[in-house]
Length: 326
Image 1 (cartoon, rainbow, N blue to C red):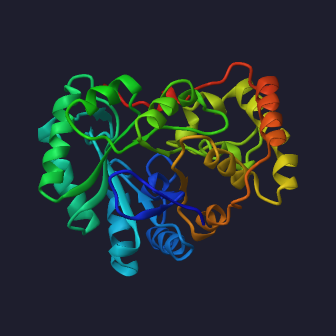
Image 2 (cartoon, rainbow, N blue to C red):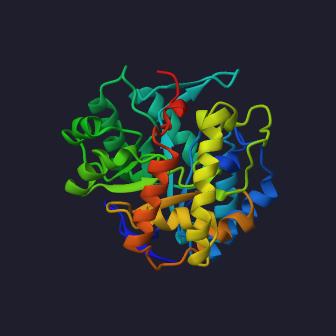
């Protein structure tokens, strides 16, 4: 297991972190609590010390499951990250709300569900155009002063939005989507974070499972599954992405790893990446992520990856479809 430091924290963290969106079950076909707790325990026993969750993952369920697992494994064994800034109604319709009033409600709810006194890294899940970024940043500063959080982070923020934040408060991390198929952050976000000492924790390294190599063109996703609305998983686009995945197989085999491990290894060695989140709801899934080789891919490998992408995916589809309503 590789470890690194994140700004604002005095603990070293594993470079593979456990992402718990799938543990919440919502938009992923559900999850089984006993198995999810076992997955968290297996992750920590394998050396994964970074756990990332959010209230919206299962509308509180993921945080509750993480809290139950923490009582079994011990709070001091993990660096705990969660998020805020989204709200929902009884119809499970999501919208952004980063007002100080909403955040005050969320921090107390997260602490209760997680069963902890403080959160190591507290992140704003999505920028909210209706609320001044400075007001949101000030709210997190107040939580820090109260001892409820340690480090301040954001997710899905642009460089200009991070710049506005940094005028009034420190910014320790940003959490954007990033994987072999979704590389938009390389243009400006990664250079900005490197230049300003901001840690980058990425999500979606397996591109909603596409980079596991487990799907075929005729695969059918259940009602409510996120991939039913992901344009990458539709029609000709799905076939093009699957063809690229097939082209990656010999490269992964040459390194003695699975396709998923190959995709994560690629992300880990990109300049500026601190932590890569690996989503799992069963022990076997997270143990695959814990066994990623520390040996980097060669320049030849990286060049071949870029050639495959250029040939198979001349017009990449981004992750914008995931953005919640304003």
